[in-house]
Amino acid sequence: DQQVKQNSPSLSVQEGRISILNCDYTNSMFDYFLWYKKYPAEGPTFLISISSIKDKNEDGRFTVFLNKSAKHLSLHIVPSQPGDSAVYFCAASAGGGADGLTFGKGTHLIIQP
Amino acid sequence: EPEVTQTPSHQVTQMGQEVILRCVPISNHLYFYWYRQILGQKVEFLVSFYNNEISEKSEIFDDQFSVERPDGSNFTLKIRSTKLEDSAMYFCASRRWVTGELFFGEGSRLTVL
Image 1 (cartoon, rainbow over the protein chains, first blue to last red):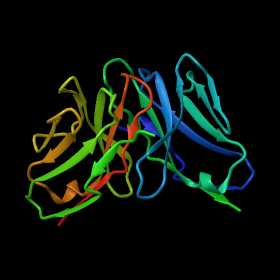
Image 2 (image 1 turned 30 degrees about the vertical axis):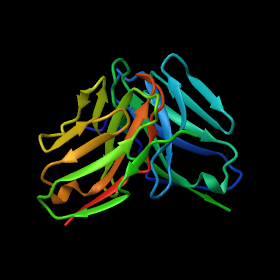
Image 3 (image 1 turned 90 degrees about the vertical axis):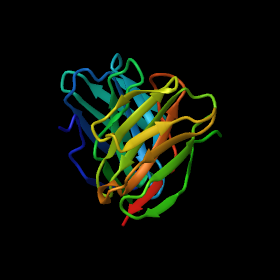
Image 4 (image 1 turned 90 degrees about the horizontal axis):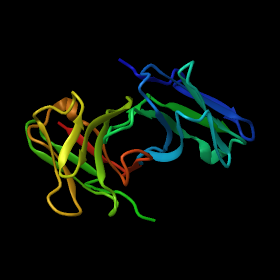
């Protein structure tokens, strides 16, 4: 049962353009969402998060949007840079206690020069 | 910058052997986790640990697995009798508070032959 879904295994974007990565979830108990970036042979690195009480969070070139009614979130990267090429994981937590994160399968973002 | 460190970076073992993967979480963190990623698949939650006991575990974390915090700094994952399907990248993670971002180590690659 995939509670967190990233339906695009890969995405190719030209340098300088906007990258939009999408994530859907099914568990209505999730109240905290995170995006992680992962390079090959490295551990996931935290990028940005959003609590369910907000619908947008911005940090530099990265913005995460949350649509609770649609159970959908997205990560926007503007402008996209070559160093952004990596696998991006969406993750969610139900909060309360020391809950683990539920990850999506990841989207491989490729920034083309 | 403080980081989560893991050893070994790669371990090759024979099926049926015991394996111990070691992690040193960030020093002031209180919540500890193990995740794994089988090649080509998503990052999966295994177990969370707080206050010297397991707080949550997934169905993957069966009786073959155990975790321990033998001293104030190390956090270990033991697999008693490894199976071929245990071959994966194992990530340790920690965080200071019950919610918020997880900090991941670079992973330990386990290859079971």
